[in-house]
Image (cartoon, rainbow, N blue to C red; front, side, top):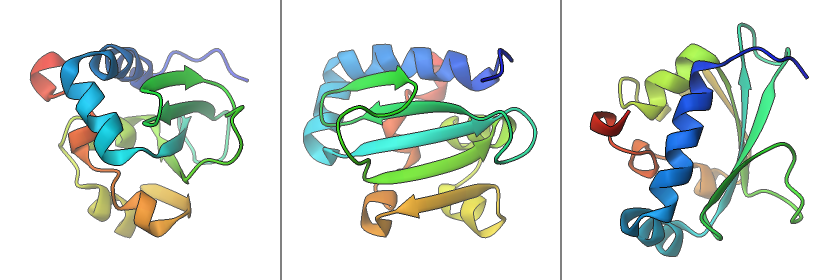
Length: 123
């Protein structure tokens, strides 16, 4: 796994804090799904860093999911993930443009909205 510093790392760190807040606890109760997010520095599929956003337990971890099967997997380039997470790019538009790839449950994927991320004022 590459030791490249991704812009997304900072967002994931903020996401950890966000999920431990009251707003984050509301999200885990409302969504209750586990997402795997693969982030590549430059090109999808190469040197990807894997994050697990567990909206059942309210955790964000780096590496493969140990608790069975994830509900949906997303793959992004680092810059595109930052745009989606900060609300600058709509996830549906990202998917249509090929900036985001999805595997797994489409109904779970549809709950993956910018609302699950901390608001841009916190970023």
